[in-house]
Amino acid sequence: ALPNLQEINLHDMEYGHRFVDGEDPDESMTAATANETIHDINIITNFRKLRELHVHTNSSMNGRYPFLFNFQLLQKFTMFGCFNLKWDLSMLEGLSLLKELHCYNNNFLTGNINSLRELKDTLEKVIISLCPDVEGNFNDLADVPSLVKLELSLTSVSGDIRKIGETDFLKLEHLGLPDTVCGGREYEFHRISDVPEVMHSIHHLRKRVLGFAEGWTWSLSELSPDFYHFDNPRASDLDDVPFFVAMVQVGSRLGWRWENDASDQHCEMNWLDPEPEKESSDYEEYTLELQAMQEKIDLYRGFQQPPTEAEYNRIQNMRGLY
Image 1 (tube, rainbow, N blue to C red):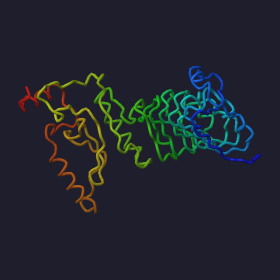
Image 2: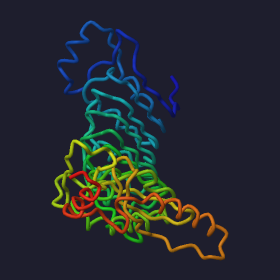
Image 3: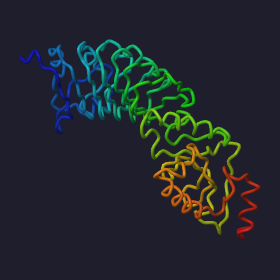
Image 4: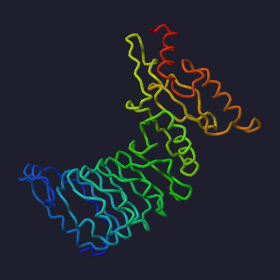
């Protein structure tokens, strides 16, 4: 029956139905669903020519199902919202033709992304998101030759954007990194002095990966020795210390700045691009936007980075908040 079937989609079953438990199931889940109608999922092992397998079963699968990783011709594998399905990235090592891996919101997915190097000759897209027990260093995949998309948001993957070399990720078109990576989205810096180098590395990578880090923000960690609080009952959100970092586009020129949480008080720009030529078509637009931005600089005019605590207290004292 359908021996040449090339794609299967496994979806959540209707209320009162579930698939048979796999190995090492969650016993409480087994007990809670004891009266439900059980369906055999092993039947899919008959389809040896599968090219695509999409699993979106919510709570209908419970435990480990090793046979899901035995389709030697598989090229695209999706696991979405499989809350009780237990598996590890190392189980993919036998899928020697796999091109795309899509994993979203899998509570029991574990493993180190270094194990994906076993598939480096074929992998083109790796999307692992909202899988908190996935770890490893994203830089370990830097030499995967055909990798065009790498999304690792909301994982525990580590690494450092500054270590991406000129010959790393040569074909990459999209890169998403969690806050556990130095320079990743919402990363918290340990020192103010670390920020310029990271911003320059991000800027350099943007020249190869269009739109990289667009919309991302960063901040100074509250554990940083550079961090301090401002507590005053008369203060408003405007008085928040500018401990957040954002990239800002002014005309065609890109830079970054320190700003407060509400983005309505900020320091001076730290430019990454040179100023447009006066004869260029975008110079007028740039100067108009620059003037409008500079007019909004208030408390931190003249500051390229957050003031020290003493400087900040002096600013607030001048405003009559002390």
